[in-house]
Each structure stands twice: as structure tokens, then as C-alpha cells.
Length: 151
Image (cartoon, rainbow, N blue to C red):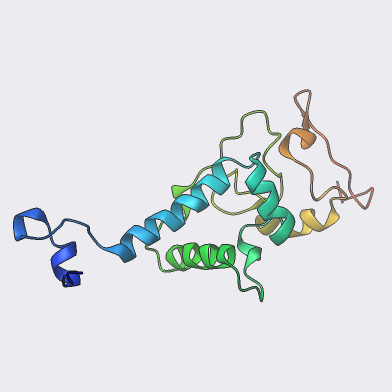
């Protein structure tokens, strides 16, 4: 077996290398591709398995867990927090609203509505509703835990 220096393998063809590129960068790209698939295909079977194991919220998966998916999430969040990866580079497609959770998905801007409107989130009796459950026949449908919210 012939051993080749890593620098030689990753160097471009012009510099006498094999043009493999950075394995670290390639791994980071693949990790972020998993996040993109998770966010853009919420109805896929594998996404429902991830959610059943780790919960519905992408950011809350970390916790005290040590798993491959927790590593994916922590890597993605590290790049978002370090401003290497902009927070608005992933957008959800609303479509019919059946795959987007009203409060817990970032479908309306960068932040989740549960974070932006925390008091309303805690007053809502249906926190796990999808967007289609809240927007019915062209009107918003709310069920609050208190009747009078101070009109």
C-alpha cells in the first residue's frame, strides 16, 4: 500500500495533487445538507422518526444527548451562532400548511413565533397545531386558555 501525504491528496490537479479538497469542509457541507433536508421535507418518514426520538424542535434536540443527530444539530447551531452560516439561509415552504407547526417552525421570518410572542404562545391551548389548523377558511382560528385577553 502506498502512503500519500494529506496535503498532496487535497491539492488541486494544477499543483500536482488529487483534487480531493478539504474533508472537514466536505463533512460540514454534508451535515448542513441533512439540516436542509430536515427543514424542507418535514413530512418525510425519516423526519418523523427523528422527531419521535428527539422531539419536534430542531434546536431542542441537543439537551444531554450524545447521538449522531445531536452532533448534526450542534454543528449546524455552531455555524449559525458564529455567523458563518446565516440564520435566514433555510426557508420553509408554507404550501398547504400541513407540514409547518405554527409556533415551533421558523416559517414567518427568522425566529420561531413561540419565541417572538412568548406570552401568546403560553396562552394558546393548541401549541402543537400546524399552520393549516390556525388558518381556516381565510380566518385565524384561536383557542386561548383565558377568554378575555384585554380588548
